[in-house]
Amino acid sequence: MDKLQLDQHISKQFNSDLEDLKTQLLEMGGLVEQQVIDALKAIESGDSGLAERVLVNENEVDRREVKLDEDCTVVLARRQPAASDLRLVLAVAKANRDLERMGDEANKVAKMALALSEGGDNTKGYSEVRHIGQIVVKMINLALDAFARYDVLTALEVAQKDKEVDREYESAVRELMTYMMEDPRSISRVMNAMWALRALERIGDHAKNIAEHIIYLVRGLDVRHISVQELERQLKE
Image (cartoon, rainbow, N blue to C red; front, side):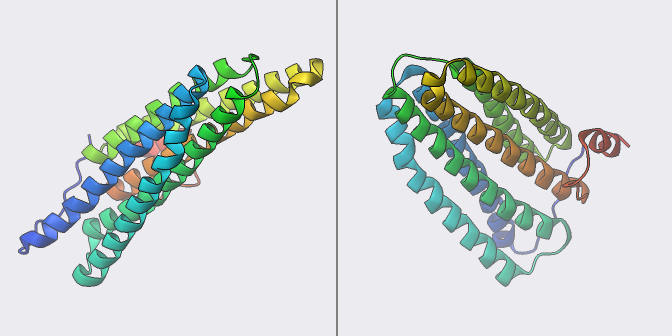
C-alpha cells in the first residue's frame, strides 16, 4: 500500500495547519454522507420532515465549504508549500468543492422526496433509487476512508464502483422510460424518481473525482481522463 510521506516542518504550526485542513475535509465529508443517507431515507419512508432537514442542513455544508476554502488559501499564501505538502492542500481544496456539490445533489434528492411524498402511492422507481443510493453511499464512505489513510487502492475501488453506478443508472432509466410509455399517468411521478437517480449518479461522479484527487496526492498521477482499466494498470505497476 502507498504511504504518503508528508514533510515534517520546523514550524509545528505548519504541521498543525495541514492536519487541520484534512480534518475539516473529513468532517465535512461525514456531514455530506449523512445528507445523502437522510435524503434516501426520506424518499423510502415518505418522511417530509427528514427531507426538510436535509434542505436546512445544506446551509452548514455551504458554510464549511467557504471556511475550508479560505483556510486553504491562507496556507498557500503564508506557507508557500511545495511537493507533497502542496499536493495535499490542492487535493483538499478540490475535494472540498466536490463535497459541496454532493451536498447540492443531496438537496435535489430531498426535494424529489418531498414531491414524491405528495404524489400518491405509486412506488415505481423507489427500488432503483434505493439500489443506486446504497452504492453511492458506499462510494462516499470509501472515498473519505481513502483520504484519511492516503490509500490509492481504496480510491481505485471508488472508481470501479462508479462504473457500476453508471451501468445501473442507464438500466434504470431505460426501464422507467418504458414504464412511462406504458402508463402515461405515471409520467410526473416517475420523472421525480428519475431526477433523484440523476442526482445520485452525479454524487457518484463527485466521489470518483475525490478518488482521483487522492491518487494525484499520493502518486502524483493525473488520472482524470483515463479508463478504469488503465488506472488499474498504472496503480499496480
